[in-house]
Length: 108
Image (cartoon, rainbow, N blue to C red; front, side, top):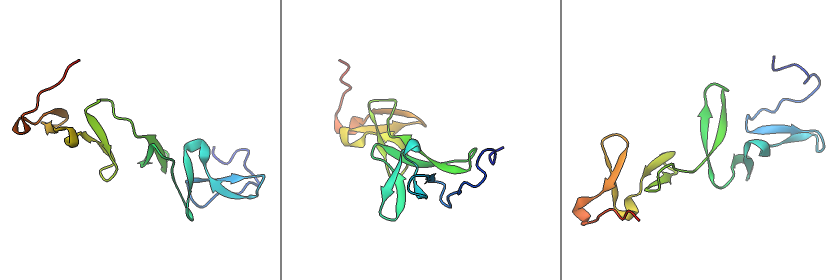
């Protein structure tokens, strides 16, 4: 179980933190990409936080979008069509050039 081998070890109140034996205090869990942000821990730049239901704790996920015409929207917490470059959503998960803007897809 989870308690094996941690007898006498402090469990941190915040799931973004881990106990540092050297400093004898809870610190942001850098192995899981959390860094200090004021009095809290936040995901380091290039990562966004999402709740991992299986592990029942937040996790940091890279902000990379599979498709090059998508960009990561921090507010939405997801990849969205790159509207700055004229892309709009078609259907559920396809980005196309917005014909209203007179754009065409450059395929080189």
